[in-house]
Length: 89
Image (cartoon, rainbow, N blue to C red; front, side, top):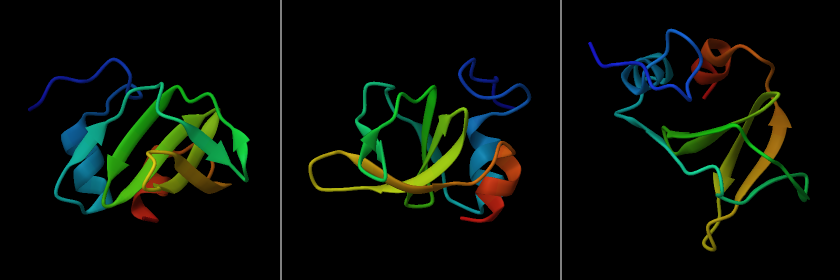
């Protein structure tokens, strides 16, 4: 089993993130990646690309897409349960 990544919640690995999201893989992005929620900047503590979407932790989990300029635009908060968010992708 893969080692846990210290930036993921306790008990989570990128392999588990991909499995729960029913995606091929999951990748961590740098925290300096620009993220917006309804046009306002967000200071993420975690950014995961999984299943063509981006899951961003900013207190709660946000979901969004990256535009051509490398900015992730999120549209809503999906709560604080990572498993629920991933199953909803």
